Image (cartoon, rainbow, N blue to C red; front, side, top):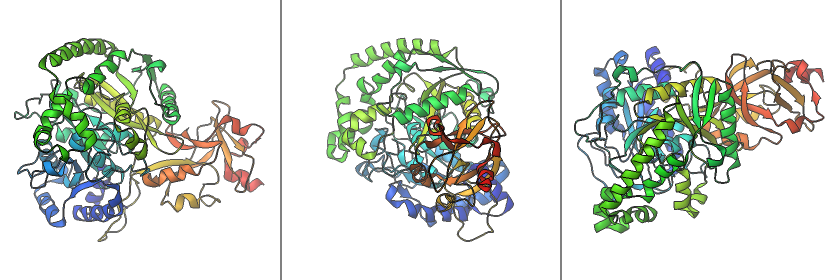
Amino acid sequence: MIDMTLSGLKKAYKEGTLTPAQVMAAVREKAEQYKDYNIWLYQLSVEETQPYLDALAEKDPSSSPLWGVPFAIKDNIDLAGIPTTAGCEEFAYTPTESAQVVQQLIDAGAIPVGKTNLDQFATGLNGTRSFAGACQNSFNPEYVSGGSSSGSAVSVALGLASFSLGTDTAGSGRVPACFNNLVGVKPSIGLLSASGMVPACRSLDCISIFAYNSDDANTILDCAEGFDIRDGYSRHNPFSNQARQYGLRQGPLKVGVIPQQQLQFFGCDDYQKSYQRTLTQLADQGFEFVEIDYAPFDEAAKLLYEGPWVSERYIAAQPLIDDNPEAIFPVVRDIIAPGGKPPATDLFKAQYRLNDLKQLCLDQLKQFDCLLTPTAGRHFTIAEMLEEPILRNSQLGYYTNFMNLLDMAAVSVPTDFTDNGMPFGITLVGNHFSDRALLSIANRIQQSIGMTVAALDYPQPPLADNPVIDTACIDVLVCGAHLDGLPLNWQLRERGAVLKETTTTTPDYKMYALAGGPPFRPGLVYSEGEGAAIDVEIWSVPADQFGSFVAGIPAPLGIGKVKVSDGRMVTGFICEPYGVEGAEDVTHFGGWRAYMKSR
């Protein structure tokens, strides 16, 4: 198996168990398994990849942070010699040079895999608005992938790239990260060059990053960042090396949150519960939450599509709108076409109001280490999105649309799984150029409540012509019938899960023998200071198998977070308290296996 994280590839290359050519061959082979997911608009051939592999011979792996690392590029960002379509075949052109960010990543040793699917002209947060078809979610293909950077997120989530580039105007670097269990970095505007990127709203656009974890995201950001004199919106980082200090944020944190009455989950109880679980877990880890007034943020967000900024989208697509409007996806055309009408007076009025709102928002933000919001309020199926494409897309942007208008930075972090096994995440928000501070807080979140996205980390197989890529996996804690050798363990093994660790919970859990069976099942319930350390196992489950595994869990059991002996919070089996009423307390056995032997 191939660990596709940056550290995993670096280790394998150093030990000589893998070569970049083998990794790229394995990526191509695995991509064939997911052809129906509509991830790619263009994949590089063996011949097109070879020059990038040859160039590695001239680079020192020790000074090339991305040496031999495969990455995907959203198809509104240029790669020299490869068509750029922005999701519209009639718009296509072939650039002679790569976007500056792409070139910097290649110079650092990264290898492009291909160009990824997107909502046409980066107009959408859902991933269904493309001539290539809707991009499918990596956990459940019936759900939207998120957009507009749809293929970029799914390619990483399915192990077809170690990281990817997206773009973000209204949330396109954050919503797909949430829906595919990834870290998504929306950098400060101008921190990464926008040269070689097809604009959506040129004054607001930025190139974004999808990665497995905050460490990888920070390394990629370091390689991608840089001032570009050709980009009129490029900015020098005024904090220089100070702003590049990334690590594990320690100590108490004061964090702004949205009041309950201003939260919106659009009828999705699963996301609401995941958000509340996340806040509870973070509060236990030293996060102090203080409510803000979200009204000015929300008002600013509405200006993006209800104000004159839609004219920027019109400018980007104007030649097609004027000469060949039928080439544009109908929903995208309906959004963009009115952008030619607002008078200049509307723009100035909106700018005046936006500056007033910005003052109000920044005044609130300055008292906090960051603002924390849900990344999205609901995860729609593809069918649901197609039923109400404009309304439901707008709902996806409730927590994201304000960000670039207010010149803020953001990092999306996976924190939980819903009861039906779908990913949930939060977004950390700060003023511009707070990128590394936010990544450091994201690092703490991943360390403290469980890193929910990881490639398997166990010894590599002997050098082979066709090594197998390990899909991004989710650590799952089991405590009962799914333990190794017990009756339901086959449900893990048939999905390609691998036993990663045997450990115990903290001494804060009680275990009960639930009614029913066979197979007999335990219920694990948190009981602070009144329980015992319970024997558990942690299994690494391929991300694309996690949803089907969770779907088979019967009530009152469910998936939540369990604290293990070293303090980590791991995704695992828990039991609703009502389920143990009248059940036998078997806590004193210290684990399900010991209890079953006593029967």
